[in-house]
Length: 151
Image (cartoon, rainbow, N blue to C red; front, side):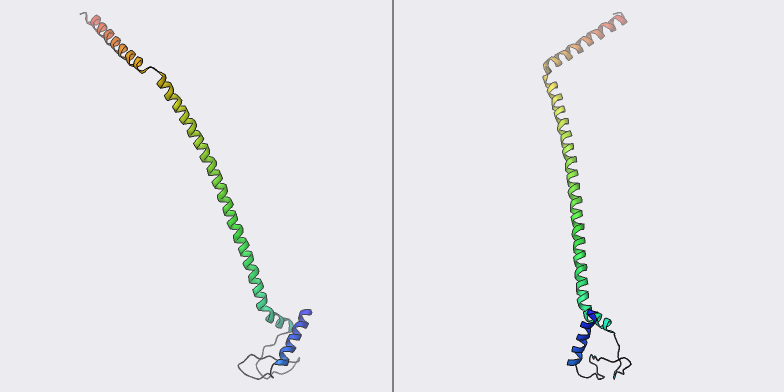
């Protein structure tokens, strides 16, 4: 009801400063009593409709501001979610990388240990033993062949 009285006071104010309504191509306003006649083609609004028309611009500005704030908040949350997901993915990738690096380090140490064991062997003795075994096999083979052939 307060809005209706405020609207009514606005209408009275507009009537007091406007000229009498006449058929022109300019916006016109007049207060017509119930059942009254208007000297131009008109559309009538009740107090509530007039109040809505007069406050429509302000209402839409507030509505669009609220929509903007909502969309900005939604976008901010979406971006924050994406950042969090990327951070989780980065941390998971870092853990996998560290595990693979550790496995490669362990494998490298095992290979180094194998190489050290191989270096501890006496290479000249291995060569001499191989040559001696080859000579012995050759002599044994020749003896066996001679025995078989009877020569």
